[in-house]
Length: 179
Image (cartoon, rainbow, N blue to C red):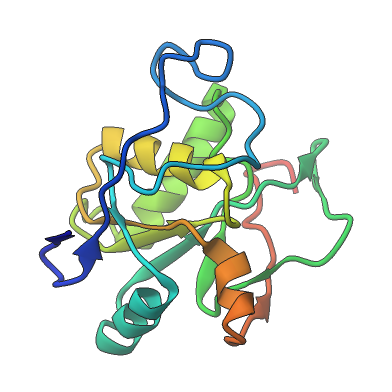
């Protein structure tokens, strides 16, 4: 195990084979079957457990929590059931899709810029649900845009709820000009 600069452990494990062109873009983004086993770590972030998320939130008040759980989109977000997330989170649905058009890229980038006040060293915890490639894709994208202090909570809201931790009702951030 490696320790990141914050002192939290980083797990390392064999990576999922990104050469499976049926599932990934040439740039390495997962394209479909998003709810399936994910790697135990990402080269783009420090993987953290539920206990580590709790500890980080207790120790640092300026941690950015980013929920990337997808939701159906048809010029508006269509929620079939309420989404619960970690208190203090910003919900940016669909930014973890394998391919994003320019409007979705702007949506994601502009919110990252706003949330971090342009600081590429700001601590960002990205999550979705357990075994969800959306968070993995969103981490990869943020890393490619130069964000340096990324944390992957791969157990996501499933892990949070299983540990009987407080949740709040999530509301997706409006898509510019569409909501």
